[in-house]
Image 1: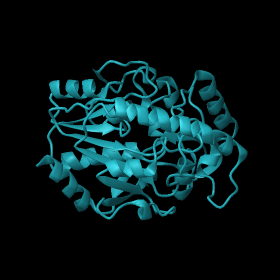
Image 2: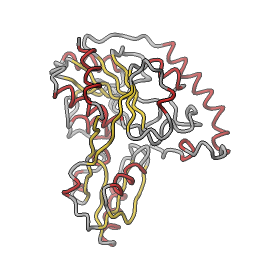
Image 3: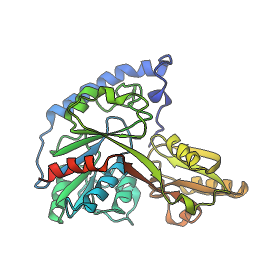
Image 4: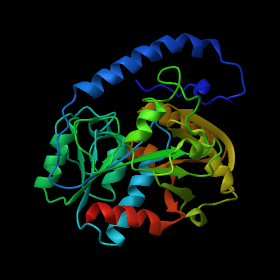
Length: 330
């Protein structure tokens, strides 16, 4: 069952350490031991085609999905590869074996993020990333864009890129469950060939990055905002690692938000929840609005009652990230 991101993970560094965070710290040591054990026990195998991994150090909320979609668009635009496939674990789905999914598949079986990726390119889901990569190769892929998997050591990556959200950064910089980190910061950065920082670097992440690792800046744009009725009242909702970001995006784009409901990341919306939201909007003469990712987890019959705000990632220096990709292709 998905759980909401603990607020203390991203507390103000100057604030006192809450008791719950202190209680969790011994568990973080156990987590670190398990991570190191996993790192040392895995055999890494090579795929016959280039593998580009877009991952993060924190448990969700960094902006990986828009980043990997933007990279795909860049690859296609400049014809770096002809048939780049997405490869995902399919988090939140029940299927483990390698499969090429369809946008019409059930998110409870394949996960919500893969369905969003499948709107842009052929997408493979598989718990075993090497098996997934081999299926992609068999189906004609000439490059793999690996969504997440930075902490998965079973498949060799030709290029590993870490995505970090500039506003939330790395939180309190503590390992799970005391903080949002999946692994120690230094260990992660030592395996990365590039960093993407989305938005303004409010937590001075750049100071942690060695000079030999390139940093690419980007920001998120809301799309098609002119198609919405800005005089209407809206009730927003989102099931993300950091749903507040969607709330902020709505306000930045001048939506009149009368209420906002946050759910856990990958939250599977049930009929009762959606019916309650629809009823709330009706009673308040308001419209419902959510994200594209959330839409993947909403049954088709309810989507006509909900507006969707799409987003895209925009590079501040497209030529620089393009040069990095071309070096991998050579």
